Length: 110
Image (cartoon, rainbow, N blue to C red):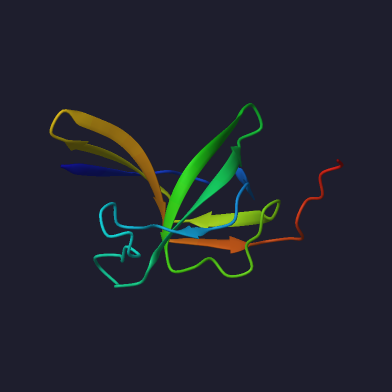
């Protein structure tokens, strides 16, 4: 059972925390594909900021997010929180219709 809840991102800012990596099938280690489009699934971590708090969330998207690098401000479209349960396990995952760059990467002093 999966329940998808849309998230209003209009008041939020997102920064890409990690480069997108292909989502792999557990047993075969082959790339997973979106069931609707057949596109390869990619996962990346985003820093979500709403002015009062920040949270790192792992977001899955169909198709490789082009031009998105670590430190990159991004626009997230069609973000949903997905509650899932399987046997005695359950959890929350995040899925976006699209993640795209909106500015130059933020440089962090070392």
